[in-house]
Image (cartoon, rainbow, N blue to C red):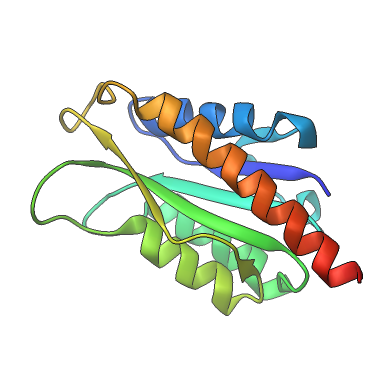
Length: 155
């Protein structure tokens, strides 16, 4: 199993979260990749795919959805996945992570986590205090779940 964390980022906040998640997935030699560089051959059955985007117009960025569409057309059967977003902490906002997670599932991935949100202070950030630590911890949690999932599938 390898891990790939794919992200789009307008101001660097989502990239910082992706890198922190990769730290939590270090034992899988996690690779962090901007969404525009993602190729369908980068991910294969048995891998962990984590996709993140800032909220843009109440949903993931167009680049993120286009990349997921390219992956989905090939299918993600056997891939385990999770979605996250970066957002301003308001009582009303979009939910890019939920849309990403739903899209991964529709493409055949087994989602192993609820959609995850990480918070920024304003449109351009910076991230709220503690968010990168929370992202690293989430990466560690994903690692544990993905390993358990892989063990169950091979039994």
